[in-house]
Length: 380
Image: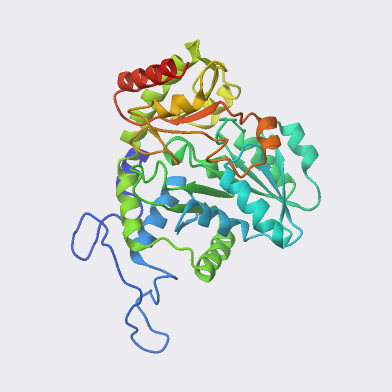
């Protein structure tokens, strides 16, 4: 089945008992037991809920994985995956990774002596030199947030397997519609489903997909034990959002291509980060491992532009956190999404103070260009 159809009919398609085309919302905390040790497959909704399981089966089908798990947020999903590791273990992390991932490792997991190192994972030789005996996993975003750095998933996975390490890929920006890391050798795929999978800025959720039974069993134990589950209504809402992913992403990308080309030629812009541009480092790798480029564009404004005034003068584009909604969203990584990362690290990797990140929505592309032009001109 092609992915456009799988988005709509994957997982558990409707309700066999009633014929309803929409999976029911099982808004229940507990279930009637038939006797000692006898039930109908469910005991308590932290452990298992039919609506959540329909979502988990759907994301597993879409990523071509062994199984999926749904969590209360993207960070809950990331936290569950990090809980697989032990005191003294070390994780290699893409060097301009999402600030929340950095924060939970630096401020929470390091308290338990789970260590990490920021590495340019697009540079295989640099990565090889960073692998020591205590390294247990390579955690990558590709494209990264916010500098859109592209890492070769297949090469990373092959290297990891040769060293008996796990490969973890945050696939939030691409979604399984455009990129499927498990098919390229990754072991675990993560999503902040709050973003493109939900698609309407009306829910917070996280998803994990794994490639084998052992990881599935271990993560389900962690999910049940720590309890960071997604509730039934948001599970249903997320299934509904996923059904329109292909048509939304096609429009997102059409707009993003148009806007990235405008920004790349603008005299008010210093640099543009978007893998769809042929001058983007990693463009060829992106074409090899994905079927599109996504719809997040980061760009550095010229020093002559007052970035605060630029944000304040946006009218159509919303200045706010997050990305992946039908509406265009703009943020300032240095003080918002990546504020937890120390200044010197931000400067080193390129998250400078005049960097903006634009999540391109599905509005009319000419209206978006007009808004960007006006905001920049008024901020001179």
